[in-house]
Length: 180
Image (cartoon, rainbow, N blue to C red):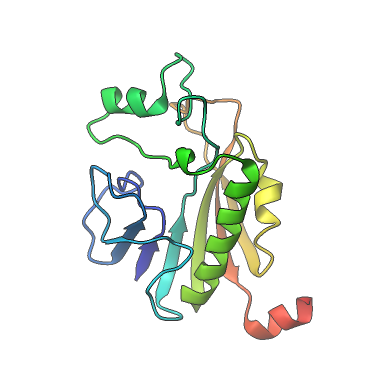
């Protein structure tokens, strides 16, 4: 079973209706509703429920109008509503400071430790728009980084920023004790 812990409008998925994926988000005003509305830092799932967790948190904090600013000067929210059938939702307006965003990511990964099976994988997507990748990786201290894939996208609006997919496995409880 897969958990999409930041489903937004399910923009990552080609098949937006898979029976093998539970989509969660805390935003109630989405064009494509999640399976469950909840905060990924405190979920109703049992321990060790998921084989894979997908985590695509906001990569930036709120801009002057509450959303990212597009190079054209329009907010991303307006830009994507005009340019796509289903708008992309980033969640950037939820965080006013970098510290709030970092705290959110840290608390979410603790919940992922609980809900991911021992042999499960966490996939994290990160774009180093305001916070560099090394800073994000350092918060995942109870995880083992298995793979880092640079995802260049020709349509990416901020071409100078790098986007990555990281694949991690959680450390077993005995290995966590050894690192303390």
